[in-house]
Amino acid sequence: MDQIELIHSGQAQLDALLNDVPVSHLDPYVTEVLSDPYPHYAELRRLGPVVWMSRYGVYALPCFREVKDVLGDQATYCSSAGAGLSNFHTEKPWRHPSILLEVDPPEHDRTRQQMVRVLNPASVRALRPQFEAVATDMVRRFVDLGECDAVADLGAAYPTKVFGDAVGLRPDGRENLLPYGDMVFNGFGPVNDRFKASLAEAAAVPVWIADACKRESLTEGSLGRNLYAGVDRGEITEDEAALLVRSLLSAGLDTTVFTLSNAIVNFARHPKQWSRLREDPSLVRNAVEEVLRYDGTFHSFYRTTTRPVEIAGVAMDTSQKILALTASANRDAAQWPDADDFDITRRTNGQLGFGYGIHACVGQMLARLELEIVLTKLAAMADSIELTEAPTQHFNNTVRGYKRVPVRVKAR
Ligand code: OVM
Image (tube, rainbow, N blue to C red; front, side):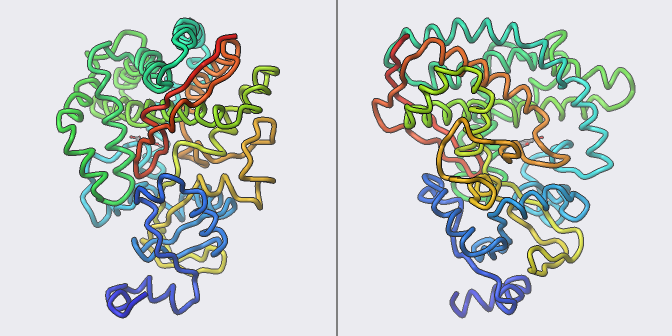
């Protein structure tokens, strides 16, 4: 740290220095780090459970225990100041805040309840036959192609079809969904060139999204349309229903697209694990969890302190942004034996890829259903999946995935 940085650092940075808190100058959002974040996470964990990130003026939590503790205590670590780096109490959010993710109880509980009324074990179970039928056709076609792009031909195509239908979207215009997710997930990081580019490249996208969220745009009986039943019962407003549909579209598509791409890349790189899955398809549920633990999609989010607190002996002030590195916690050797091994037979209970606590992914059963079905069909139809070229990563401030995964698939 140089003199100038010290002078401009502010009270929190001085506190960190005076209290001997480990300091990292890492920028987690640069391409070089995003291309392989795991050695950087290991270095942060080596520094300690609480690390001052000088570049952004936040404390990072790279270890399992502290991440879980913070996500489990929404009274002390709030979401209403935003789940990203930006503090909504002092900065203007780039879009209307999510009324699900970026709120605290009691507001949160009211909107979460509305979401759970339409997205629950029974409604997810009801989607299975349709999801299976689409997967049977799509995976068959994918395997028959032999050499293809596992993103365009399966990883993106499948969720765009089944999730789009489940939410109730019209078939046209769905190409707006991934660019929108890109904005949303870049928006949890800094206002860097990556975030600005995703906003600038697609100015019409939020307009399409806003229209797609309207009652009359959604098909009868769909998850999205069913959210409007809450309006008819007088429990939420029409605008709130639209914002809840927006939450489905924000968080629900690119996450499953990227997780499918990550699953295929990791199985291609670990052929023994693919053989194990083919030999014992009952491993599929645990395999999905292991993909999310080992190389998951959502890597981090923030909380903000509501009072002065101490984490692992480090004192911090009110209104302090804290970076919860869930993807690093998922590689913490104190929690996971041989944490850096991809092993679909390991005990995966408690992996944090869907978050933890009151904001844990509300669509996680739907996501698991998509992933489970596709991997099951693929394991039944494909003997092997090989990368024919290095996959092309999709860089985003918060989510990890690929935009192109050239593969050769051998049919069974
Ligand atoms: C939302 C939202 C958007 C992105 C992610 C998320 C991880 C929620 O708009 O509610 O949860």
